[in-house]
Image (cartoon, helix red, strand yellow):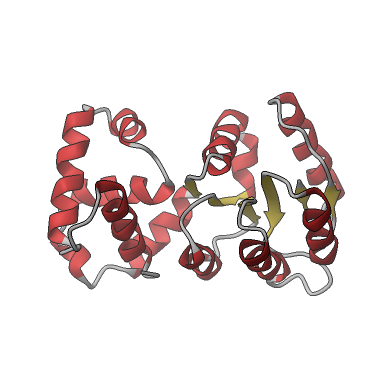
Length: 211
């Protein structure tokens, strides 16, 4: 499902998604129509503009929070014209599963955009690198200062939602090296003992300032 007030972008998104094998069950132009359509169709994934009519402020985000509460089985990929880290943090604070926040310019890189859609639909996370970069600057004065430059790079890529293999590919290192960096990150952030996946989520939440 697509919720975007710009007709041109909405038509473009439909074409991109259908070409990639997604079935688009509905396309709407405002938050009220979005909620009605989700209730009717119960989609696996909704691509939602952050700012929509009538106020063009946070209508999309508020609708997304309602969807998370009423229909938690619907994954959400938010699109924004600019970096608005507060909205990203607000959404992720509810759950780190099946959530994405990308700048609209990322749609131009179709391959990466589709990869992010699949990751979110499968229950993962996809955060725009620019959002992560701003959060990294904002969170500079806390236990994150214990991390080395490389460990901060790894944590930033974790926050984008990338797997160990994806991080290794991006940094051109081995997966074992990535695993070692992640273990160091978890230790330096003094995270409580738990299963590996849960500690990884806690590290990302600490990084985003919402945990």
